[in-house]
Every structure is written in structure tokens, then in C-alpha cells.
Image (tube, rainbow, N blue to C red):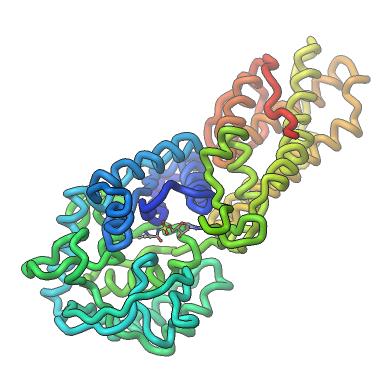
Length: 486
Ligand code: MSP
């Protein structure tokens, strides 16, 4: 059994609005990984939370006629409710308005000042309040924000700057030395090319935005929301002296959406290196979901609310769909029709059908469940290696292929025609395979896995237990795992 540690994070989400399916996607990816590593016996710390400061939140609260704190408290609850319905097993939920977090942000900035990495200057340029991003003239697209296509504002104010420009070579060396830092690989070149073009110092304070962490020793300034946000990964584990920091840092993987790679792959490691803190082992950027072919947006009326989906479908069905439908790393399109297809097809006809066939056969037979291993066992090491590279779609595909092989095995062996030892042998192979599947699918579909284990009379133990052994369950058939959806 592995005894390692595994620190995994999601982005902390802006709380200007309730969560949508894109946020749910990030959470499911991280949850699958956290659960897999727990099954390997590792000590896992799974962090998520909310990004609550900044101009955007300030404006949304104002429009809602609420104080920023009142406003964010309400929205945070919506995120927590959604994650509980999706069975997200996070260990800690950080809010950037937490007292502890704010103190750590200030301490981090003070350390950077002591190290001579920050200076005072003046920022003049564009700002997208929606993405909380400073933009140059060159970066604008038709005069608008290249990320969200919204109008940008011109700002000119005194600001503190972080000497990001000093870190170009250090970052290029980091990418070169640690090839998995920029994951998946096919996205790496884009970042490398941009870094090669040169880095500009980064404005890290605002004087006009007050809903933010105060800058240390300067009442006029407030810390830039992205600096505040990135530091959640350290404050949650009590940098610099806490036991958690000592145990869990560096993070094993930051899961993010591709649009925030620059912050995580360039600004974040530079900040850490500047403060002599080791860099995370991997930043994994997943792709984006569109809905019915279009970018999700209120004006198109196509924003998918995970809570609404979960009022019609099981949490496991949505989790399965999100991982299975789109090869991880790529963009994909969400539609209820494809969700239904996955449920009626793979979940119902392949997995549900297999489980109910095997349980029915075993329940009615009085034979002893034992014999030789007749089927080629599933390659658990292969799945583990795929999961190490965050190839979750491929890993799930391996499990589903094994399920289809088992259905074929039943068709070929026709166990309903067999008796005695012969039947006992086939049932042994099928029941042990189902027990192993229940463990392997647990990270993806925890409720279904538990139902399977309950009906088999076995336990979700750990990855170490995914080898054939004498079957020690006690079968009792319960309700079907999945029902057809129209
Ligand atoms: N607050 C920042 C992150 C700070 S992390 C130190 C932020 N928040 S966000 O609310 O905009 O959420 C961004 C994340 O939500 C993305 O990185 C991605 O993980 C997820 N997604 C948002 N829209 C998405 C899609 N349409 N599709 C897939 N995921 C998307 O940025």
C-alpha cells in the first residue's frame, strides 16, 4: 500500500453568480483524483473554495443592493450545496475573506518586499473587471477583453509592481526540468512561446478597489485580487510554519481551466520562486464546455445549472458523463441528449445489465463460488498510470471495456445452462470481477460503487485489493443501479 501524500486543488471560484456546469466539471475531475489517491492509501488533502474579493464582486453586490460580505455569503452557500449534491469530497473549503487567509496574503507580500521583489510605480493601461485582468493594448480584441469579450476600462493609478520580468529564464528552466508542470503536454508550447516573448512586471495593487486585502504598511493600496486568490493554495495549509504546509507542500496538482493557465503556470511559480518556496509538481489545464455549440452565457440563455441537472439525473450519472463524454484536456459540448445517451447506453446496458445478470444468476444458485481465474483480469497498473497523467477519460474507458468483456464472457459461457462446479467457477470469475469493478469505479461513481458492494456483500477497500482472491461476499440483489431515461 502506498503511504504518500497527495495535495490537489481546484481554482477558487468567483462568487458573482451561482455555479454552472463548467465549475462542476473541474470539481468532478479533482474529486475523482482525490478519491483514487485515497484508495491507494495516500494521505490526501483536497482543497477548493471561493474567490470573494475584487471589483467584480463589489459591483455585483452593489447591483443586488447588498454589502459585499452579505452578497458573497449567500452565493458561497450555493456552491457548497452544489458540491454536496455532486458528492464532492473536499477536505477544506477556503474563502478569501477568511481572516487567516488575509493575514497570510499580507505576510507573503511583506516577505516579497523584504526580498526586493516589489517596487512602487504607476500602472497605466486596460483592465477587465470581469476577469480581473490587466491588459495591454496589443492584447485587446476589437477593443474588448480577449477572454470574455466585454468592454474594458482604462485605468491610471499608482501601483506596486512585482518584478515578474526577472523570472523569464527561471521559468523556462522550470518547464524544461519538470515536463509535467505544464500539463497536458499539448498546451505547454503556447505558454513557453509567450514566456519567450518576454515578461512584463505585474501590477499587484489597486488604489480604487477597496473590497480587497489591505496592502501591508500602505493604507492607500489594496492587494490585486489574483495575487490574493493564488495564495489560497498556501494559506489553506498554513504557510509558512503549519504542519499541513510541511506535510503537503508542494501541491501535487492544481486542476484549472485552460483560460487561467497564465496565472497558474507563469505568475504563480514566479511568485513562489521569488519567495524561495518550491513550485507545484503539476498544473493541469482542462478544456471548456460549450452548451449546444455556444459559449455559456446569460445572454444566450444557455447556462447549465448543475443543481437543475441533479434534480433530474443521479449525481453519478452526471459525474460519469462529464468524464466520459470529452477526452480530458479537450473542449466539449454539453447537451442533455448526449447525457441521456450515455445513461441509457453504457451505464444501463453495459454496467447495470452486467450487475443485474450476475446477481440474478448467483442468487438463484446453490453452488460453491470457487475455481480458477478464466478471464484476463483488468490491468490496474495501467489505469493507475493513466490516472497519474490525469487521463481520466482513458482510465474510465479501460474499466468500461472490461465491463463489456464480461458481458461477452457471459454470452459465450451461457452460465444459465450450467450446473455444479462449472457454474461455480463462472460465477466466481464474475463476482470477483464485479467486486474489483466496484472498487475501480468508486472514484468516478461513488454511490453506484457502494450499491454494487452492498449487493455483493463486499467492501470498497483499496486499489491493493483489486486482484482475484477467494470471493468472500454474500450476494443479495437490490434495486437496479440505473433506470432508463426518456
Ligand atoms: N477566481 C478565479 C480562479 C482563481 S484560482 C487561484 C476564476 N474563477 S471562475 O469562477 O471564473 O472559475 C474559473 C474556473 O471554472 C475555470 O478555471 C474552470 O476550471 C471552470 N470553468 C468556468 N467555465 C468553464 C467552462 N465553460 N467549461 C469548463 N470549465 C470552466 O477564474
